[in-house]
Structure formats: C-alpha cells, structure tokens
Image (cartoon, rainbow, N blue to C red; front, side):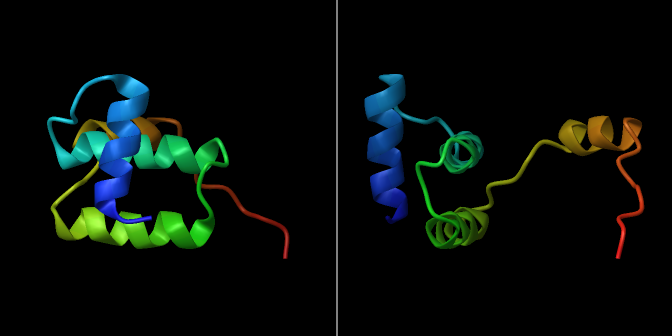
Length: 75
C-alpha cells in the first residue's frame, strides 16, 4: 500500500478527505492496531508520512509522560 491508497481508504471509511497528514497518521495507526495492515506496510507508510511532516501533537507526549510509563521488564 502507498500513501495514495491510504488516502483512498481513509475517504472510503470516513466519507471525507483528510485535511492534514497528521490525520492520516492517526488513521494509519488505527488500521495497524485493528490488524488491517502488516508491520511492513505500517512501517513503510509511517516513514512516508514522516517525510511529509506528519507527527503526533506534543500534548500526546505530555499526557503519556504524566502516566510515568517507564518500568523495568524482566530479562
């Protein structure tokens, strides 16, 4: 899948055109979480959207830091 196909999938599911690459990034992550994309497709599309300056809002990172998600995993 390429970015153009992701846009078409977005339009088909949401019934409107994405207004920003960040909106596509959110949609991409949802598609991956729901098993609609393989990890290879996700990575390729993620890097393509990243080249187009897609990013998570800074408040997303602030909120995740509030939960202190740092923990030790067993070896």
